[in-house]
Image (cartoon, rainbow, N blue to C red; front, side, top):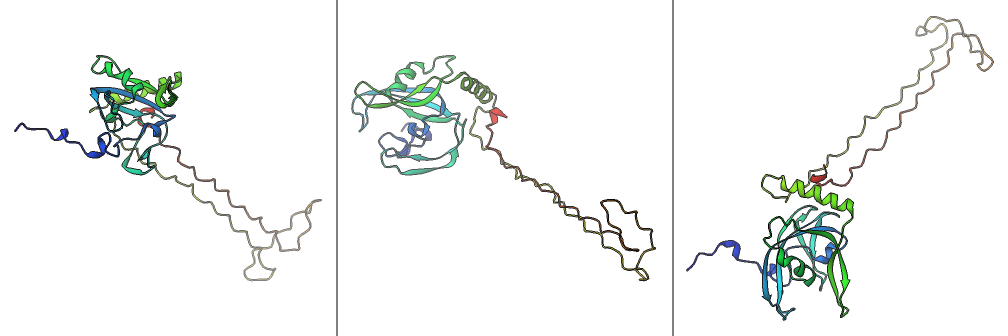
Length: 243
């Protein structure tokens, strides 16, 4: 019996028609900037849902915009299968099967082509001649292309080529120390008290200051407590290729 490597075995949820997928669906990627790189092709494929022979392309895929995706949503039943850990922006999902004609027609002849970096675009939907909706990519803006180049440079600089990173934890905000009000000074007792300080000449009265009785000094005004500024709130996690 010929030895068969373990990675040749596949779980049912990763096979077309098996009721699920290990990756977020294209419906979950609508509006996101994505990078797709074809790694293999298979022709004359048939499935219970597509009995007509077609081409299936295996791809690496990463989305570069939007937040993490923590579940795979079944497009027919709406059931959510949790992803643990969630898929992060910039994380490359390998071994994704793509058999939608729009993608397969553009990627099947690029498998193994030297120097081909993949395609990038915004996931959206179009309508075919028969009225059926299909998934496609639209061109990204110059700013989004710059973001893709920045990510691609970062990805290729990783020692192992893997970008299945875990976001760095956000340190909790440190509130500034609370400043309390100074206590008000208590006026001394009347003259003749053993606790009274030495008598002082009263300050001359001005037009706005009444004359104080002998031996009495005005109490110092209370110092209001300093206002404690609100603690800064942590912002969204910055992808590592943008740090």
